[in-house]
Length: 490
Image (cartoon, rainbow, N blue to C red; front, side, top):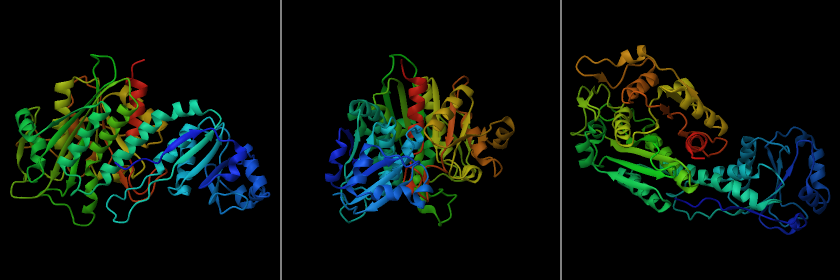
């Protein structure tokens, strides 16, 4: 994966600011209060900063906004960025401010004079998250990102605070890279190979091939990929950072590397976006990377089902009946409702093998969730209030939109089949809910479970606070925080 923007904390004498190269960022409060670095800049620029603060445009500036002066007189830097930010900020406000600085810097060398800002580590995280590009397939040589140095009065403390946040940023970037990759590059085999490379981080990685999946009885998963030349796989990533013998948290991701809809072929318009249909597996992969990098004191297992849904003479047909690993039979009404067929077998396998303390599955599962929640929130479905509330709290703390949706027997009844135990779709009404009800049938009694439908948040057409348009990496930060809050050993 491409290298993250190098970010570090350092002691920088404010008096040396006029001689710095590259770009410079200073912090000014909305009231116009300058710190020592700001006063040095003001003197060096012969009062230009003070005149800016007195201008009407500054009075209208919002907290977190960046005002840029190009080629400022009296300084050696190419650009001076004035970050408007109160002395006391929340972690999310600091992150958004950092993201704004990353946009302003545009990948160039930058020094940020953060003074004694308490949330400087969160500011640095915002820079790391937003300083992302995906240009692997452009022929022009990409420039290496310029280093970002944060001048701070408490370098050891800030460095320590930033280290686990940087691990989360790297997990987010991995997820984005996976989701942004075209399907001819990120085949099921290439995906599995990239996950196997994480053994170097201390993860145990096991790749289950088709013969093993057949032996286990994962017929619903195999039915999705049987029309493709790419072999279906399940990858198991295990992180044993907690107490030996403690039941792990299981994260399960849908990894459809490309989804044509199968025989129930999708319309041509927009089908190119179906490279992101492995978004759930991407989030699980990025989360496992983040947990390993920050040495999480928890036992967590990540499982991803990797398939490609293609139409061919061997593809599953509408009307076929397939038996799941659990033993239940499924009438395939629509082969474009394939994600739940992948997940149900992996969910059952995860419970059978690992006896987890809880299960969370993620999938770009339904277009219906986008109709309901747009691109601001993922749909959250759960059978356990304690686990669900803990996740919603973590998602809120990380600024990742999530909204709980209902479950119920009336929705479950929509899945009744005339010839099998269930259908794989329940019709147009409540499409996201019936998909969740389908998955719930594969959750054992007493197992806390969350289903996250991330179809609206995994990849977007416009830039977000922390990401350019395309893959967002939604969910890595929230899941990492959930593990820290609820599952890490004391």
